[in-house]
Image 1 (cartoon, helix red, strand yellow):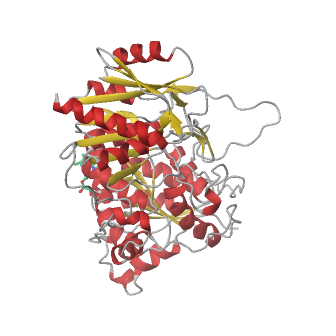
Image 2: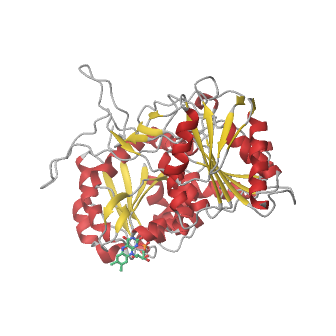
Image 3: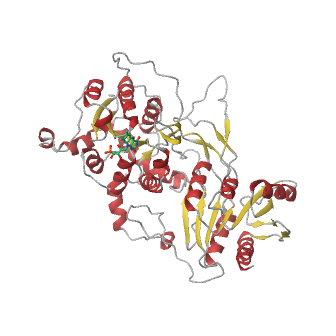
Length: 508
Ligand SMILES: Cc1cc2nc3c(=O)[nH]c(=O)nc-3n(C[C@H](O)[C@H](O)[C@H](O)COP(=O)(O)O)c2cc1C
């Protein structure tokens, strides 16, 4: 077997210099690299350096007579097993998300039939900008594997997420993407190649196919994006002669930008899709919700979180909890029935989207925190999700193997406190409601939580029985001046009772 063929697109970011190290690393592991530099990229790293390291010509322009006699931009895009955009600038991500092809890099990404991976790097504000977040969501839903940037001090002096992950981590992601673990490619010695450091694991894309009971039916929510990616990657693995671990997919996914075209053309036929239109970007989840014209919550925006979160240990394992999402989904449905515009941020659950509700699917606590912050402002926020308190400090980029002598140690880090963050936000909703699932001293913990988190109400429920996953619930609404205890009833009725009280709170 020959090594993987990587087409490396280098954008115009300050981190472009790290692409030189990445080229060396890929070659050290037996891969071939063809570099394409954007005009901006060439301001930060020279074609000469990349040509010397890759031992191949470096391509910088679409208007190259020698290459284009043979339609070079199409050829490049088809010859690789994987296209890696590193660093992916905000500009490149925006162009990729909207199908712009105005230079060699973006044209070949539009022309490719191969999987694409992007490694963003930019200033923290650029990264957190709504436009960039939207572009990332579009790309991920179209099957592009977008790595999370590292957090830390940036070249511009600011602090936060946006730093390019270390080349070692990028290589590990490439190896994972191409299923190279265990398939040790021959090491090609290069002059002055540094010793490969111990793996510094990166946040992976969750692949739940082994652990998600719904995955076999193609229903695994965690696999929504992952399955699209994996289908593209499946072809890449075949192309380089690797046996694919995954069961064969029924139909290979068309490449990113072809999918967009198809999505635009296809009318929604899934009954779930009746509440949604398919966006111009092919993001089938982009909603245009139906809702009643009137009701006690008309003109109010209600934000609901629901379900568990999954905290990745490695690409196939995660920490989760037993939350079914039913109570949160019921509240979202009841709020929409009451005329509200509803945003439902859902962890990985297998529940249909209630009519008239805009749904945002997430997996981890950090993704949920981001989605909540993007969904604000809201008039009411109801934080029903059972957010994992902790996550593994670092998630392995490739599946952890069994070791004979001892299981791996799991070091945990605290997750963001979404309720407290919303309470402290300048966008704090007028009515902020938290949930407290307790197995003992329910009211005591609920009162304490209301104060500590800065919420207006805490809906406390005793989850010592089969509430999690069950159809009924018994709740106590703990407010500043009183506690309202409702008898046991179906979760739909609990939801309606709560929504009535939300509406009352605005009338008073
Ligand atoms: C000194 C300097 C550093 C820059 N660093 C970044 C960066 O890290 N990430 C980014 O997205 N843009 C960065 N930019 C802006 C991009 O270079 C600019 O958006 C350019 O149009 C990107 O072109 P490209 O996407 O075709 O490579 C930087 C610009 C300058 C002048």
